[in-house]
Length: 185
Image (cartoon, rainbow, N blue to C red; front, side, top):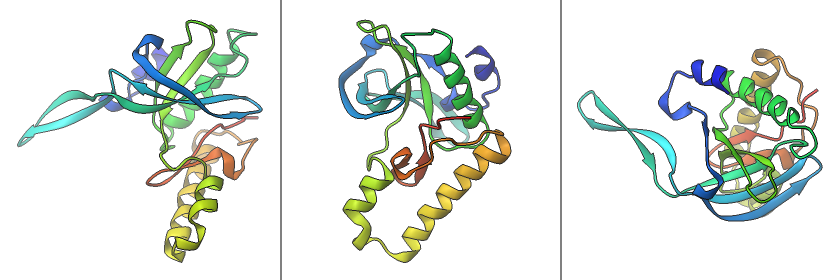
């Protein structure tokens, strides 16, 4: 984790340890073959930079932010597996993928490690298309494809990973599309 912090250029991208008691209203929103996904409210909030006046800025936090939590692979069985998955995700993040990763936490009851990342309001692409396909214009549909293509290209060309579990359930939709749950090979 320290190596990724040292390679971070922007305050908003710093990865941090997030105490589990600073996450409230934790509710499961999905379960897949590689873990569970939860929605939670991060009481301390997401890091941001606010412009004060002119060229002056201050570091701040967006209080009570909605975030997503994902159990990291086999965190109960092998404590090093979750670090491998986190390292892979961070390598992709540092190489231009757009999904924001905020940090890691540990559930104090189950002792599972969870990655804390950006919550996508519209859920998975499959859910989004099921609910909105007829209302989307062709330019919007093409923009979604363009976002997905760019993300996948960055994972392959810059991070040098192969996405081994690529399907519409692992693409998140918000203001743009994000590839998640990378299932690396």
